[in-house]
Length: 368
Image 1 (cartoon, rainbow, N blue to C red):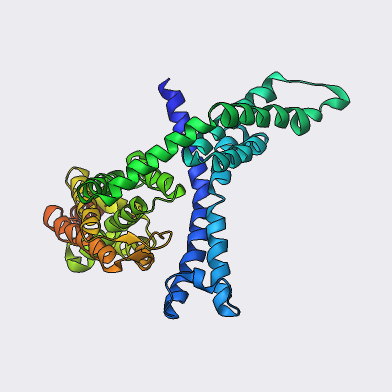
Image 2 (tube, rainbow, N blue to C red):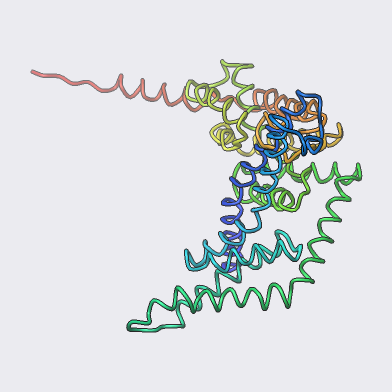
């Protein structure tokens, strides 16, 4: 049972990983159009709907971006199925995404439908065997007919209304949390701490997946909180390396240079080489930094004005961008100062160099 649940989680995360480039692409289109629109002094590009020239181009770019984001349920359903059954699951997986969009069941419907599509496709391909000249009818006709038919019967007729109601209830609840000050702070603390706990591991991915699930349904604030937390560990250790360079080995100094870029791009794994020096001290420090950074963003009332982007530059897609950057700065300083106080990042390399030198001095070769 435990293995089955792990498999299901892996299939869902695979589907989300395929949907993520769609999210990013659509968000970039919307963000670029809105930022250029702001340069014209217009915050609502719908005012350009009947215009011509570059103004209409901006409106059309925004609309295309939103339509690209609207493909997410299709991609999610299809590639959850693909992760289970390969190409033979794609037709039913796309049908799952379509039904999820039609019924309003959103991510929940696409995910469940994708699992149904994948497992049913795998089962039909094993159980239905036709030999001879009609063998090609299985993947081309019989398999899609059965698996897409199951989507219509189960996901549309049987579960469509129920999943649509459940998804709407969940989104309303989360939306209320993001609008209530206390609940938003709690949400920020939990997501920020989880993101920075294992730096790309299962706890990190659970928080990241939760934020992206909500993103798929148009609830953007959790994604903002997660985006801030992700950039904190690599930027924090990069700042620590520059703040007190003599506390770091040459290897970690070079890693710190790379962490600057990884932090700007939002790749938390850039902090792993530093955290491994003393996980017992640095993991709690990372969690504290992520929690304080995300909570700062929540307290300063950052809010989405468009589908938010990850990375440090994601602040430009947020209302009150200074709140986003302040949260990143708070978390970065917690690690930059705390890491230098808690850990000597030179010890192991210095000891290894001394041992190598000692070993070299003991070696003597003579030729008579």
